[in-house]
Length: 218
Image 1 (cartoon, rainbow, N blue to C red):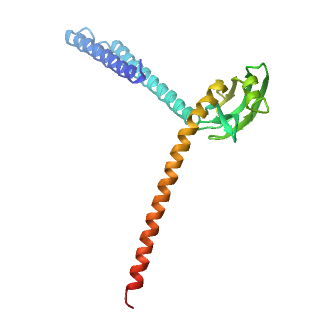
Image 2: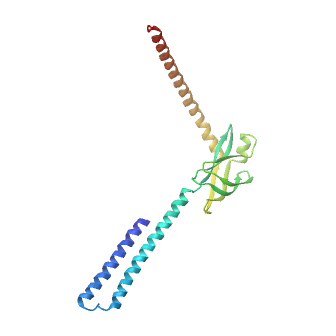
Image 3: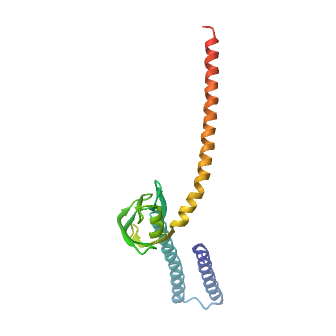
């Protein structure tokens, strides 16, 4: 149940208790059985305890919400993914969060059986690093690092420990990239052709303006 719904329910409960006690109190006064100052003191104390308890709960809830909002504002989020450095696939690790990641400790496991650690003291928001994959060429990389798993943990500025658990398929990544290359090349050729046509049109307009200026008598 959401906090707002709980808050509404609590408010109705407090009001119901207060109305019930008040109704009982006034009925007893009307009947003449509740004129003892002791009972009046008990009634007032009970109402004050309920009200103070409700407001204490509200304050606590507000503090918790403020704490969560502050943590979210500076929450880091580290993710590992594959990328290209030139023509060679590499692993790219980026902090996509709003706050710095601290005390990063990871273990990188390759499907060929090799493992290597990667650690960094601080990674700022939007900061990226590139790590090479085992192998001197594409075929060797696919043999030794067809699948990659990155696991580990890091902290935010409040000391909260967050986990890294990313898996990558190098073969699928390369195949998808190679599929996109012809499409990108075609789009680039269309874009360059369009730019050339637009430059030709601008050149013609400038030539026309120049000719009109030359015909204008001084």
